[in-house]
Length: 111
Length: 165
Image (cartoon, rainbow over the protein chains, first blue to last red):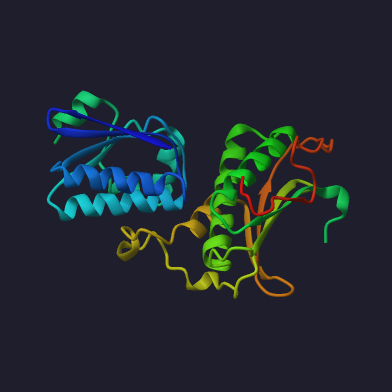
């Protein structure tokens, strides 16, 4: 799993590609968010469009990073949830926790 | 006990997370040739991933050299995956409700819930000789009655050895 990062109007946009699963993408996601926080970013948008599979460890990492960002006075939001990732978040009611956007312009402007 | 001709594959993997990918490749290939739709394959894959990850992490404590056995069976109207570890045992009743408000933001504790959400049958039993066997059942209609050929490089009773996927 690869994660690219870019900055737009003060928002760090992380774009994971592939699986966010145990031992594969969960650690990479944590490291990417930690790096963004360490470089001073407090507005983090994760573009999930390229995520093919997420398991409970990946979901747990999303929750952990959400909490970490919030604890440091920031916000973490999600963009372009694939249907199956949306299902995963729906079934555990985490969809009520995350702010999810379908449009990048709108998402960036919301911070 | 299933007869041999109902067994679609049997993998014995070392307790390492990268071997979950091996299980996924073989499982998806066999399910596809059994005629299961993409959505069904995806959710069976996810449930199996959760069970194998639990077997490695919580069952075998990621101890090198300990095995996890994964078997796919086709029985009438149902496709069944069994996952067996060699750990100290597991009480699913000890797992908290991930939907409870106090657990909603916990980073762990959702694997069992996902298995139960995406499969029609989830059962736990003690394994002979120690460990836990998880049975994941999915009711299916129109599953191919033809036993698929063994996937290339993944024969029945395949042993992944210690080198991973």
